[in-house]
Amino acid sequence: MSSRRDFIKKTGLAGTGIALSSSAMGMPASIYRNIIGSNDRINIAIAGLGRRLGAYFQPIATESSNVKLLYLCDVMKSQREKALERFSEHIDYKPKLENDFRKVLEDKEVDLLINATPDHWHTPGSIMALQAGKHVYVEKPSSHNMEENELLVAAQKKYGKLVQMGNQQRSSAHTIEIIKDIHEGKIGTPYKAVAFYSNARGETPVQKKAVVPEGLDWDLWQGPAPRREYTSETWDYNWHWYGWNYGTAETGNNATHEFDIARWALQVDYPRRVEVEAAKRHFLDDGWEMYDTMEATFRYADDKIIQWDGKSRNGYDTYGGGRGTIIYGSEGSVFVDRQRYKLTNRKGEVLKEFDSKSDEAGTALGGGGDMSTAHMVNFFEGIRGKVDLKAPIADANISMALVHYSNIAYRIDKGFDIDEKTGRMFDRDAMELWKREYEPGWELKL
Image 1 (cartoon, helix red, strand yellow):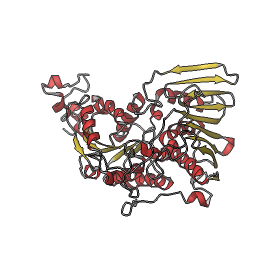
Image 2: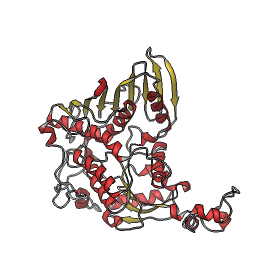
Image 3: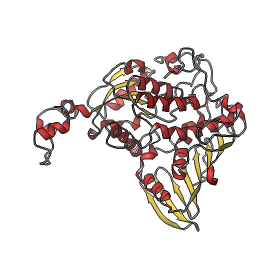
Image 4: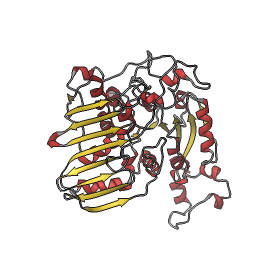
């Protein structure tokens, strides 16, 4: 058979509405899946088996997705073993375990890489996957710096495979609905969006030189980043706060999502200017090495503005939720987050509201939920050519640019102007941080 559809047509079943099933064919479901629909099947590898792992169970295990998980890859042995155990509750076959994702990319059977590694690996790993002929689903932030931001988009165009970022709220039905209302003028002309995140993260351990944990490939974990000795608490999440070699601070970790909704609502791309006020204001003697509180302002043409209110370690409920976006228009306003929306008129009277009862994770560590599932299924169907991607990398990385502008303004302690057509920064000090230093031999090449 050339495909499942051809098979159905040839057997005369397409017009009768009779569906083939594993029980009807008298064979186990695992064997059945290897026959029917094999030409449409997408073979998947996951690199990075940390806190986002739970987001992948449902979209991969659902039979209608018609995908197969070939590899679970992580540089920590215990992560691989734990991931296999957790996936065994959802699928009836065993994917291979691998330490080095470069070996995974050598397997021509792999069609798609899910890149859930730390931030400093997102663009390098994704480009390597594209060069190996794989489609890529890359978790946010899709880039570590502005140079990588451009390179990933260029690589996608050059190698012709699809790349989608994990800004999963783009696949949220209630968010799609309310953004459509905004674009249709339900609140008049939208002119301002306030994106916010409030969490009560605790004290972070001070880094201390330590023995590399058993089972961790520390050299490969560092990958493209300059080499240094291992320090305790680094590999498992706290790398987010330990300097700029690995992480992108809280804007890269969380603001990415809300920046994206704000841009989508206002229909804007690169801003004209960014201004930032940020500092470390909690647990002043702990190991957290960058700001934990930030207010950022992005100014656009037509007097449009996006503001970011990020409070990593102060959980005060300023806006009626831990994270979300408020869009102000000439005739009304909208509040939208991962669960609900509320549309009001200019007087503040509620005209329309909806609670989706979404189970998508908000400020809690970890991830997954109906939005993540829908977003990944959208990517599967996009690869098959059946739908348009909700977050193609060329658009998603414009939202990513807001992350990098925020961090750069903080690091040079001043705002700066931006070319709204190219995204380039009109500031010499800012441009010094356009790219990063790589470990020799790990420089990115297209």
